[in-house]
Image (tube, rainbow, N blue to C red; front, side, top):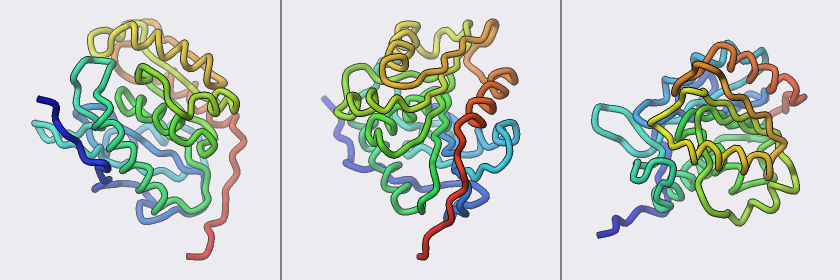
Length: 222
């Protein structure tokens, strides 16, 4: 029996220095991986250069053991669309209610990385760049793909050469092909790295972000 999913899975918990609203600096939107939580990725911000605001929301689906997810795992690398679309709708609704003019760069690890690609595909004119770490893109096409390919949004895609078991190799290959076709892609594969984030990788992400040329934006009147 196919499980039904809500149209929108709301964001319930967010951490960040400006979790109640933006302060005008470019915003890093940190999207954790499966089984983790909103406190996982903030530690990387100190390695990504100066001048960033950031927020880290918790995935909308609770899982046994106290962690959270952006979508349940059915077939690895090929998630069901229902829970993905509900999580995407909740994330976009939260952004619409919270972000006030500042540029937003989503950064995601593992299935959080897939959510980065979902954001870019859903709103190809909104995000100035994206960062996917050990993640993947969902199979199939999206209505925003053609527009995204025309924009060639800068996208950093990094993964470990020894990343096996969590995400199938074909999903990584699919993502690299998609990134080259739909983005201005920077693709890095790190020798010896498994399903994790390396210090060298963070240095590369910092250089990527520093090259975007994003400026602070004054918040509008509320």
